[in-house]
Image (cartoon, rainbow, N blue to C red; front, top):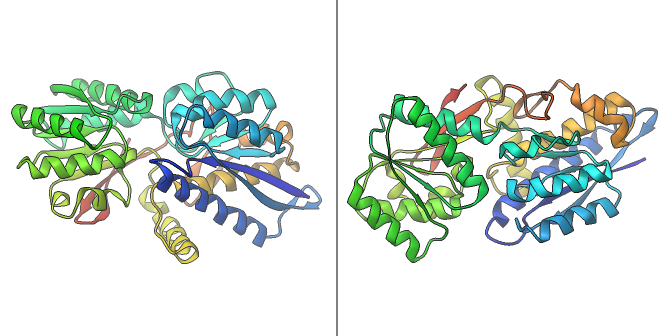
Length: 355
């Protein structure tokens, strides 16, 4: 029997490097499943990846989702961004297709009442609140500037971060928004230079965080620079430059991996680099686990039909390369850890597990 797993991510546009990383994670998962010659029920399963590009775009996303429905996939892993994952969730639900997002972190995704929607990372409210408390209680932030990129994803995290700062007794000096790496960044840096924050929190993606950090450093400022999972990539040092990375840079992953699971994650990353010739960027391990947990639910149920394996997925207890995976009643990852990282020059290093 052929089991068709859909994967959708931005393969074009500004986030294409993260989309490629995600798709490579799915490719490796499919290859590993086929190498194991698995049975689903009494039939040998051959897994096939059906990949689509959503461009992280609100028009392309639904078209990609409908294309996967028409293709008759048995389940979907994706999308990358919350802004596309949330509106496409209804398409998969109405078609009766299971969707597991490896990276959509905005809370509404699993609050829409769709029984087919799952995610393998913690959500933004948890991430932002824990980072806000850490910024005050551990990083020593007293004059904190918060910057978002006007997207739903970014503003949601920034709001939760502010709430965490206030809960910890801290003060948010100012809140700004920036969307690109052009003149708007220059204006923002000039504003920051005048207000002299000791910690800057940016809740967007690495494509803007890198240039922003470079300009902050170039302006002679040296605040702690802190961000969410969108900046926590291997590309950030290249985008910011080696000189800027000498300052204190902290970031966190909603889908981070605790220390006891690190050996399995390191082994995965080694195999990933051997297979594709590049290092993992951000969410590829979670894509890999999403494919694997979907396949395990099919095996547990003895069927690749979504209606048959959906109850098995809801009840699953699985250990993947990113750690323990089980879901609560909404489809959220149960007790998902937040992993804090810093950068030692051009290399990301684990700092702490936040709960």
